[in-house]
Length: 245
Ligand code: NAI
Image (cartoon, rainbow, N blue to C red; front, side):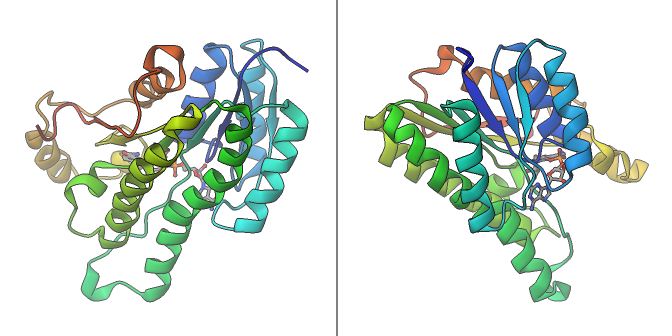
């Protein structure tokens, strides 16, 4: 088995998750990649292998407890240790509360919130035996400050913050750190779809007067996954160009 450390990244088929996987591969981690979409995962795995590390794909729906238990077993068998877990998979089903369906509420909570329970329960069991590990959860500024039209999403991302702090308190004495990042407006297909007027309104709120990049999110995750953040736990790092201070 490889002497490298091993990182698990959920939602690594595209977007921020794919960039985090690539950055951790550049940092020298072998990567265990999860997403719903196996074809997209193969693309990410190929790019990671080109960095000289081992990469394998473990597709599943992270909102399903049994599926997570199954892939964590497979990842442990394949890589031996789980040193880093990045809970990145997430979705939006935006709409005003008055018009939000129960289905869209439940789906966003299951994918964004329950997935963190599912993956942390099984990966942290492995980390506890190792007496080491680093968990990085992807929250959002919507979880910190709320956002009109994102009642379900904000609820799920605020929960991620509570889960991060509770787990940091539970696992601190076991050598496991648990932190979260809260990205603001990051340049992705999601933000590209906004109207010029919407874009301008958002930029007015940002001290740095520009969107963030996926690389800038991956850079902070890299810090939290590495040795330089050894004494950092239970923290929520906002990556928003100064959206709020
Ligand atoms: P994206 O939609 O481009 O990528 C999300 C990935 O997660 C996709 O590959 C998708 O297939 C996967 N996924 C969705 N449901 C899944 C499930 N049930 N099981 C496994 N994989 C699943 O989204 P993006 O923009 O890269 O977002 C990544 C994370 O960053 C999400 O948690 C999102 O909430 C968060 N975030 C994004 C911001 C942005 O501006 N793009 C801002 C703040 C937070």
